[in-house]
Length: 115
Length: 111
Figure 1 (cartoon, rainbow over the protein chains, first blue to last red):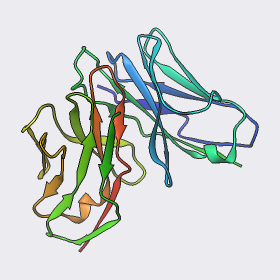
Figure 2: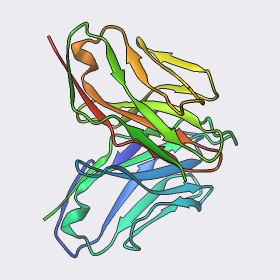
Figure 3: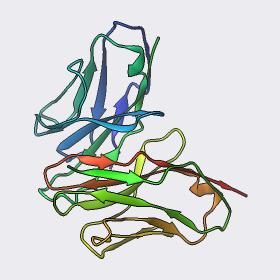
Figure 4: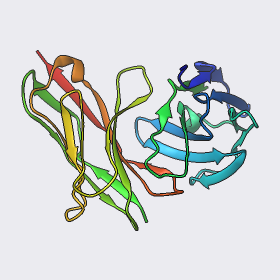
């Protein structure tokens, strides 16, 4: 089975621009979560989508948004980019058969640099 | 609320040394507990997990035991190798909730 894939792998943007990142989960997985990873803040939870609905949300401003499509693929969007948005953005998927023991499987991440 | 606290890094060990990375948690219910590992330039990979009290997760020589009485899930390995150099994350999850991750502990093993 193919793993979680994220595109693009690297991205350079300037302040004020917007960006869209894409995540394809493992086939059959219904939940997709997004995380921001920075050296100073560690791994910060952004949001989780399950069956096209946002199920959980972290403490990020409204500039960060996401969605999930019927095939479980997900996108996240960051508008009006700030320098502090430079980070590795990780996507993770899980099967979600209704048990909290489900493991999350991570993609390699998208490295976003804001200049 | 839920949270995970890991020991601060970085940790530097000589090859074949014993490793312990401490992890304690706070949870309102009965979470599952996980250790993830991140090698340089890669995403996180599941290392091991435990789903209930007294369960022991193990993989690649690493072990961790779910201790409800001390709310801990410490990671141990008897003899580390250079290839174990990575960042290790402790995490928990309760039903229907998001994953909560610790801040990560960087491990460097020197020959």
